Image 1 (tube, each protein chain N blue to C red):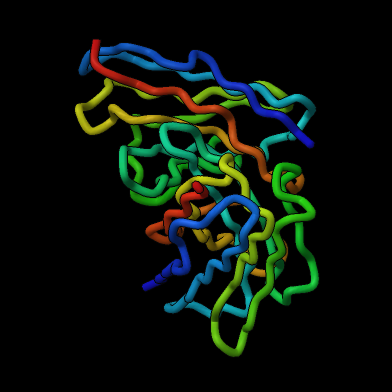
Image 2: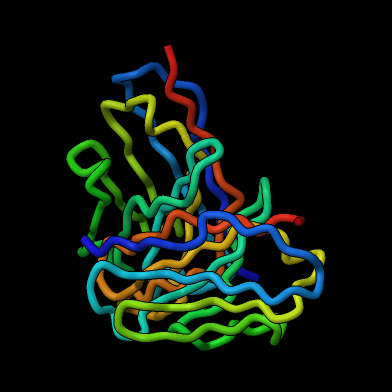
Length: 122
Length: 107
């Protein structure tokens, strides 16, 4: 079955960096886009970033554009979210999400990771 | 970017009630809408995609409708396990924005 396992979360000071990883298994990883969605404590869902199945197309929420980058290693079935210049408002649980469509993203999210918590605080 | 709004932000209901949640997109998105249910401490669960297609395994008391800019999620005969927060999301164009959520709680 599909598994998405996030790691790399933790407590970090404002202005510092953190890299999240999402290790996938149970499907043909190189055929699917991956998204990151976050949820601040007590708040709603916020779409954060997308990377296409081949890694060539990427997109970011305005709130993280210029500070976050996304990459993938299809040989390792892993997606990375590099977060720089972190702010208090980046504090959230970060979910790795598999797009349901093969190839082009359809924004249909059946499979979610368990989430990794990021806390930005001095 | 396409903005999504939802109403109401919360609704108090009883078991057996019919609940309707609306979602509006800031521009036309045909039927590129999904609905998710989320319970505290858990990842969201896909209920409906393509505005009206029920995800496999989701009870038939959930239904979705709409196209263009206005969409509706309806829960007929609310069950105890349905008390949760519901989000719409547009998938017409990146970024795939979510609505702010609607919390369904006990009356």
